[in-house]
Length: 132
Image (cartoon, rainbow, N blue to C red; front, side, top):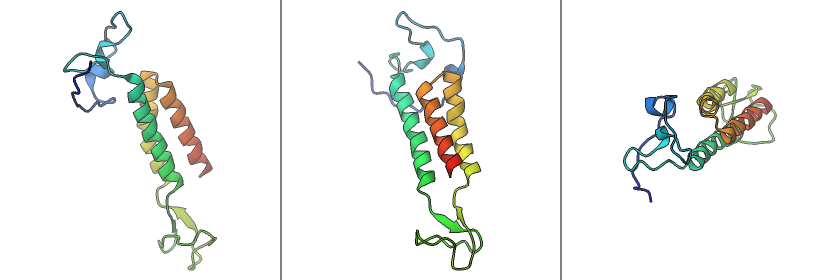
């Protein structure tokens, strides 16, 4: 049973999680991936799925963002307009470079902790960016 202890897990800064010196028990659960209160192992599939969901939400947000005029800053109101009434081009409100910066920590976590599903989700999101 679990204790329902609630804590934030910082995969990038938590020294216990990031240390490579963790011992494994007889079931293969690493000591560093345990609840600090009750010592039960974290459900790693649930942790990874939460991260994958966040990556998917980032990609979805990017693909559904508003476009704005690169000249006057007006938000595109009509999807059929090829250019703004001021003749300016439509540009992303959130840049591809900014979106890549948001995905980078997820890619690093996937690589460091060997989270395959997360790595695939980041690759898919990066493909969405290239198509944007």
